[in-house]
Image (cartoon, rainbow, N blue to C red; front, side, top):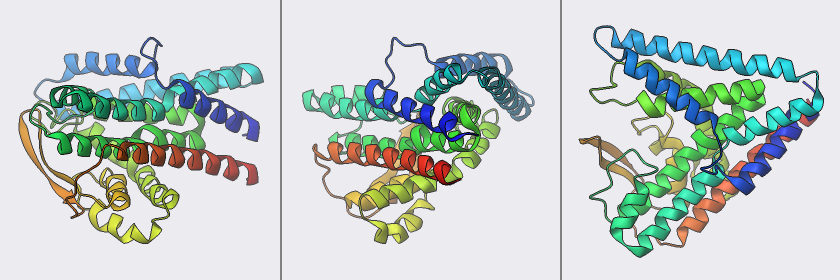
Amino acid sequence: MEYTTIITPLIIGYILDLLLGDPRWLPHPIRIFGNAIQYGEDQLNTSPFAFQKGGLLTILLLTITILFFYSTHVIATPYPILHNIYTSIFVFYALANKSLIDEGKAVFKALEQSLEQGRKRLSWIVGRETDQLNSQQIKTAVFETLSENLSDGVIAPLFYYALFGVTGAMSYKMINTLDSMIGYKNERYINFGKFAAKLDDVANYIPARITAFLMLLVTFKLHKISFVIQYGKQHSSPNAGYPEAALAAILDCKFGGPNYYHGKLIDKPFIGNNDRILKDEEIKTVASINQKVTFIFVLLICSVYYFL
């Protein structure tokens, strides 16, 4: 693949996300993914054979995604301008860095107004129940989400774009959307979503660790890598703990612990041991880390392709 066909759209897509984020008025392929998943779940999530049906849905939707984006890539490739426009648009769609940071800052801003508004705004971006959380728990949840989704929403799609182009990036987004919708360990999804959840674990294994490493790198905290390894592997997720542990190491704070999800108390292990008060201004620090990590990874991809 020529350097310009992969790098030019990458840079354009990255800049578009940096400037625009995800405007609510703009049609987004993830909404199409979500509607397809919801329809499939409504039709297939029944006993018996819930696991097999969930696996079938996952494979079917992923196959359709791969075929669609590979076919459109082949069609656009002979026309350089069309190819660059097409690829740039879907790199933009694959990234969620600005929207992630904006949502995190919005929670902090709402929290300044009242605890109730902070809880409500947080519920837009996390799966845990928020109606009983205090101010510190809300801030902790925001920071955990920003670190975890830096991997899921930014580094992972960029990683698969670098390997497989738009087809790789959007196929990853389908896997991640499946996990976010049916990958829960509750009564409704424990069997039906198990295949999707395991596939997401595999897809995020390398990106999560790259994310944690880059977070330490941009903050000059590489000496805390043993902390990340120690606490990252204790998380119930094989991947989410690593970027969360990296941020806990950088901020010298404590994440994790028990939270309610869909009415059930999940006793997650703590990450770190410094149970200090998180400050409002630290949202700027965390946002800066996300921006720097994204920039460095885009630069790394450009460098690797340049020297190939």
